[in-house]
Image (cartoon, rainbow, N blue to C red; front, top):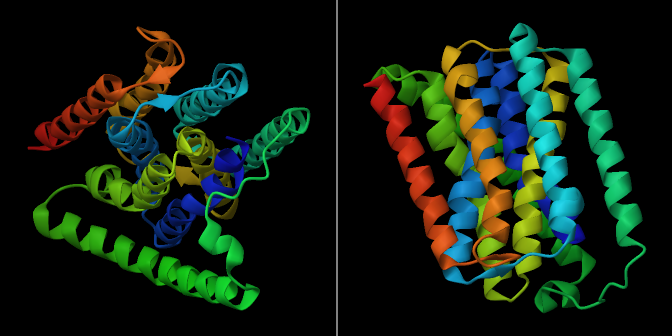
Amino acid sequence: MVIGMTVVSFATSLPELLVSLQAALDGSPAIALNNVIGSNIANIALVLGITAMIGPIAVDKGFYKLNWPGMMFFSVLLYYFLSNDSVLSQLEGVLLLLGLVLFLFILIRDARKELVSSEVVDGALAEAGFAKIGLWFCIGGLALYFGSDFLVDGAKEIATKSGVSEGVISITMIAIGTSVPELAASVIAALKGEKAISLGNLIGSNIFNIASVLGLTALIKEIPVTEAQILSRDIFWMLGFSLVLLPLVFFPRKLMIGRFKGAFLFLGYAFFIYLVFQTTA
């Protein structure tokens, strides 16, 4: 769970970071903001839904003691910052980053008190040499850099030609695109029986998306809310999916997210996508 909420989450949040930075620098703040909000919705409803339908996910006590409260704290804090003056300022970006540092300190401090297994999730990676790992790292980094550039340009082109706003494209197509690493990591972890990593990856990724992605982006360039739907609809869906995760963990079967709950989340995401395009039709 700790590895999923730190190392894996940071890695799978890099697409959101690069896309958001690229969009902000290109003068498209709606893409930067809706990318994160849409990605957080997709992580819980789409990715967790699909992962749970593959196989039930057992949830440990750390979920409701620290991880879920941390995700809700950053989600509510983002809503407060945006609803206050419709701008995510540089100061608020700094506060988000400092909050992330504090959260990670508490998470790692608590984890060190528990006995952890030295079992390696990916045996092939453990046997690989530093040269091969470095090569994978460079290839992945280049793909992320150019991929984020292509994704932002393509989304803006689609929005222009289809007559749909950049916000709609970013909260649907871009959000799903940047959530593919979370989906891949979670499904692979679930198939390998490391389902704690699956859940930890998604919760941690949502925290990183808000605190580091938007925090760093706002630090470089303030992010204004340019579309009313961000505050009137989209962010409430993000808060709603995050909030409903807690009762789903406890009812009807305690500390278990089964296939039925996964299907419920997936159908909820499908309804959200339908609603987004329906309101713009």
